[in-house]
Image 1 (tube, rainbow, N blue to C red):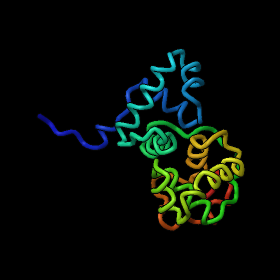
Image 2: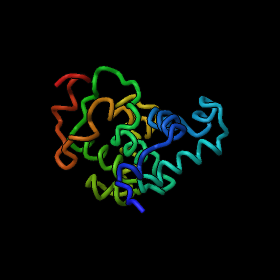
Image 3: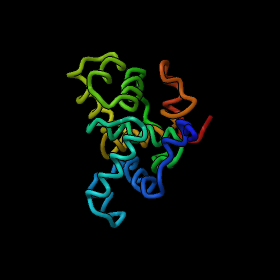
Image 4: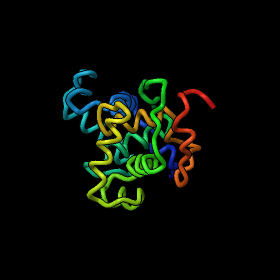
Length: 168
């Protein structure tokens, strides 16, 4: 028996990739299922399977699933406006915590805020960035290179956040 690598274990099937593309764009189960011509249950089943592959089983883990899929570079980020919103260091810390952790206590701890502040602060970030919802926020953050491989997750760069997408 051959032991599979972590990369092999997280490889998405073609159907999961199609679902992941809708997930990172912020589609709900109903929207994504309609766009792909499948039942809502089938779409949700694929979202759950994606989560299991990346060890994210929380029901509230859609943003973390989107981050894991985008970080694995198996799907591209959704289209994003060319101008990157100017986010504070605290905003970037919260964004990264939200991308990496599905549970509120973990998000709060990583972001350095109280649990009660997590939801209101995420809603504020969604509004400030023009994202459709929390999961779309993660997709846009990847498109703007605010999240992803090579980013310093513990010391976010505010300067990077203010540059137009595609610049060095």
